[in-house]
Length: 299
Image (tube, rainbow, N blue to C red; front, side):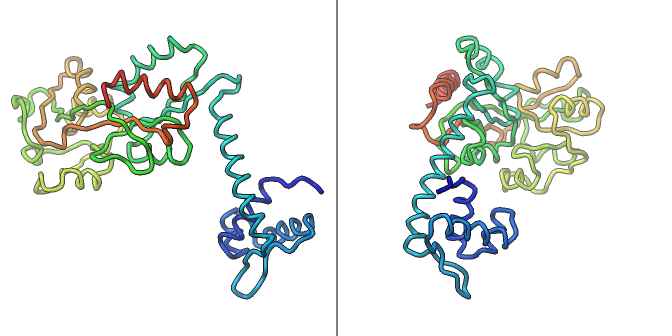
């Protein structure tokens, strides 16, 4: 008997789970006739009928049910093998995929990563920049090994540990009507034009965050995702903006800007470091996770 490839097994599993050749074809980006041909070839190889065909679709025979269970186990094993091998670079050295939101990368990661990698010259870290709301999904889907995100609540589907906190503030140019204020609520600045992005990245998500602390949405004149560019735009008088305090501090003197403390509770953000399975990690991933947790002071 010829060896069966995992593609055939994936198609067979899809047909059983979808109870339909056409739906299995959509799931595998194939045409229905290709799925039917693959299943027929499997049945020819085994010399057994694996699926009953009827007007409502398909369902497995007893032999097909056994193949389905074993195929699922084999595909899970194959996925685990791929994920394990993905933990190494092209030269066979350990690789860690670290997904993080941009503000964490700028504020917190350069120093600890430099210190960690100095102790593990055989390890490579791939730093994947993403939005906080995407990071846990990347961990669940196996697209990253460790993730860092900020949120009001723990993300479902991952194991999260407290990492760091920061506070966003309002950045205005010197000479602005608000520049002499030491602190204020965001509500007090709504008469002025704003530059996006906002915490949580989209205006709608930001409005959900601030909820009833403001009486109307800010007037967003321009969306500017890069922090340095945003500060340049503020300097040129194009608007004021919410910026993480530690990042804004880099530009205040050189660009003639002022950072005002936002008194709103939501201005303080909690960051978490997360993994998919705390009991099933490679040694390099486990080591970096513990290093980040101890360095960040989280529990």
